[in-house]
Length: 311
Image (cartoon, rainbow, N blue to C red; front, side, top):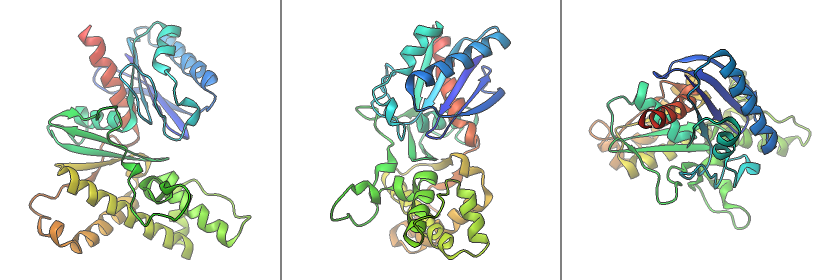
């Protein structure tokens, strides 16, 4: 048995999994941005799991950001207090169990090849939509990490006109096509321009609901969101020539989202002469990840399971 954690900018999903990737139980807690308190919370969860499941062999963690082989978190996505932390080392010292920590999108990609929609596929991309956009790159059956573990930060890609001043990440995929940091962020900015007292919305389903009710602002922001996400996907298809692109994150289980994305992707493909010519020949399909919101946790457990087996 293993304990798996999937750390996100908003929540931490965790559970107990067996050697086949099956989830025996799972829960979720809000992400505590106080690093010391956060580590203590994880320790308590593992201790409780050991009380219920006697043979906990290790801990697998999926987390955002650039994570080096020794567990050092060079960055941690939106969780700024975790920059420079080494949660792997702290947990190993406190609990006496082996710990593996993996970038969240890499973990999702690994999980999909293990028991998901990428079984038997050697070249594919896995995109995780959440607070930001993470990417897992699988080339010839192996995770491609780049020289410093930074490969797959697709959310940093710039997709629009560069502003004259200020942070140019305002026109990045993270700020335009992520679920929380993109769709919700843009909606809230637009709301505030009309009404400075407007309440922020951080749930994509609520924005989709408002669109269905005929709200003009929700319609405009969602149209832009699907266009920006589709542009990002076409760029990735052109750069990597994958067999498939899998979309993960909580929104990937939403049928309306998947239908709208396919529609906009098809519309833009038809207007790109070169890509459209290759549409039924080499252009990768874009599909929801099979494991959806559990992929990060499952992929993290796969990593620690392999580490324990090799010992």
